[in-house]
Length: 259
Length: 319
Image 1 (cartoon, each protein chain N blue to C red):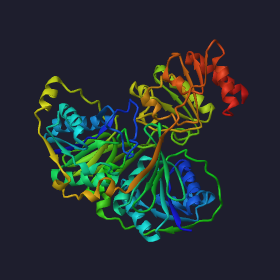
Image 2: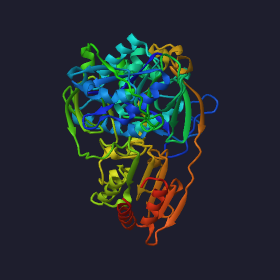
Image 3: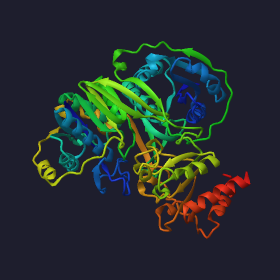
Image 4: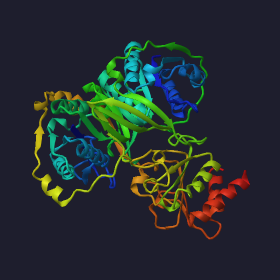
């Protein structure tokens, strides 16, 4: 099975994150940039399918030059190769334009199965799998907590607010996964060394047949007008329980009219 | 005034969800609200009275197996046809998994911009979003097409405005391409009478400090006394104390209730990401240095197994 995993480099969600004051895009220059956490689960799932059914795993990333670091990190887990879509004109692209570029790249890769994280920790927009599926005319099985592959039939368990749904589709398809699906492996030393030699193909917009005017700020379908930091919360009263902590807690809730 | 389409979220058990009422309230500021029900047979009939109470002048309905038996694609197709026909002033969906997914497909079909997790929307289409775990406030706008927006639950107070909506059944003509992802089974899991996590006005969450699954009864008891939902930190979920769908945080649900009670939760950045826009935060933790106290309006340093039962008893006394 030819599997492509979508990987996004994002600013570390454990640190302070900002939008740039000059063009309102995510500040990646001063951030510690890492693989989107959910994508590691997608890579793990792809590797497990390859191990059980054979095939090849390709990592696909759209991002600036420095996304190479995340591509090597992804490859160190075990995928066979990577494709990096990189082009200066992509800076400032909205989700709709991004899906156009990724769909064009996927069109060249002939994937049976595209796996991605359910959302990225920077935007948390969650729209990419369905946007890509819509463009490619394939099924999207999103929010999987379990994926079963039986020949060309995919079955997914997907968490809902009421419980879960079982959803099936035939390949080709896009599957997005939550962090409940597996436990991602740590790259081994051998994996890290091997990753340095794995092929990484770069593709420009020209290679994909996408016009620069369709992406970036020129092609954006939405715009950030302004942004500001929310004033940080400050702690209020803190008491130490000396036998009356529960009562005092309720007294506070009563003054706030919750009780 | 132009129509504003509000895509209804509802559950079989509780009917119209609160976020839908919030969207109808918001839609009245922008134009004339029309509710769109995309669901199983008879869904609109069951929901239209409630939708009318909050100002829906019209209810469009697309129902049946063709709509409900597959993941979102048929819903997006029907909605796209409706948007092309009525040319609404805006389209509002809930910022839930399904709401975002329908909106995603609609954006591609119409080559239209999309804004998610919106907490306010002005008449000129300027949206307010909260980004980076509640640390950044963003004003943004759709610059191509109409305002296509997903609204985060608990963004505003729903208010009533009685209307008597007429139900219009939409012709459903979905192609085979929309029927690729078939729902073969829907399984309801334990839920009880508690409000849904993202919509609840009170959320009581437990963390690693709760110790085990059995002890979560304590969290549930306090939640029930406060009429709230139960949440859990990632540490608690990863340890198997509580199911994943109740996880609050970066890789779980984002909640913004009036009151958030954190029990035995240290307040790692991953957790704060999902709850720090809550109106009032209360914490109980035995570690006086726990970062959760930096956010808490009221904090008790102490053993939650002593503090929580006492608090529960005190609430009962006052009732």
